[in-house]
Image 1 (cartoon, rainbow over the protein chains, first blue to last red):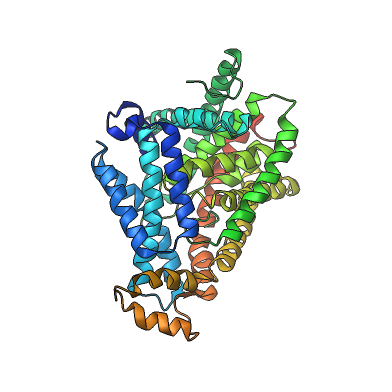
Image 2 (cartoon, rainbow over the protein chains, first blue to last red):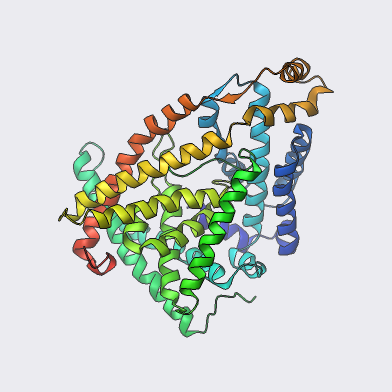
Length: 205
Length: 240
């Protein structure tokens, strides 16, 4: 899963972006988001995107996968473009470069900074939000582990494909149901363990 | 379709700022509700459903880019408060993955939250349907349709100035005579509109293509709810 890969790159990477202080990366992100709101200059976004590409190619990250992920919002922008009358090449390029600039900035941040470190830096957020986001982060890995086990078991038992749609939907729904009940129980246990250890909603690193 | 996939830089400031303002107001209410309880299990449940939504949205049914979001399931199983928190957490994490913008986190939380709340309300109101499967199916279908309508409204309102945004960007390249910028800029000044969003075409995309996704979402949610009713009834509301 891409989220797990991002976490791995963030925790194990050794590029120069990994060594940049988290607060500086957050300021950079805030600057890019502010630019998206206030700047309409196509050339500015072109230049910004070139700078971000330079960051990507010098930061020892898997560039192809990150670029593919940063282009992901374009899929959905395409749906919007279908409903636009009088669309021209400039409009497509303009929105593409704006959208991909923010997406690439965010991905560079997450691929070089572990999420707990980001949450530790987000002291301005209320404790219950930090706690919730941290528990969500933990739950993704729990869910992924349970889902992988269930998928293996499902395939070993001869999972029916799309040729038998009714059976397929029923069995898939049951498998998802099992994943939900098992992973939810594990997540609640993990939260209870955190509480016993004195977790108060803040992350200290 | 109930989830706004618009990235940053498309919707106007007033709209996404309003989204954040409403979410902030909801958060204050939730904080007042949970402040004294110090119940980490509620957050664990919200966090779990956020993770479930993130994982569900990561798997696409090719080639149309359909994906489940399971917000309705969160509403039915976790209840309105935890589901709203789950929607917020899921949208923050999705924004960090480049799936949806940072500025639209508020609006996305509202549309997904509306789906979760509607599913919870309809599931509760439809208590006269004894079997869990059809009850969850109807609740999810109604909820996703309502949330899609809300998302459609947001996009229609938010893209009224789409052409103007393009023209403002075009102004920067006029000097370089790229993309025949000069002619378009003059036309724009003369009052001719280019690149305006057609609500009809948008409706066809949202409600035409989206309807297939609603049924898919309702099928999976209903099957999961029926399984939970049988295998883990403690997870569903007591009245069911």
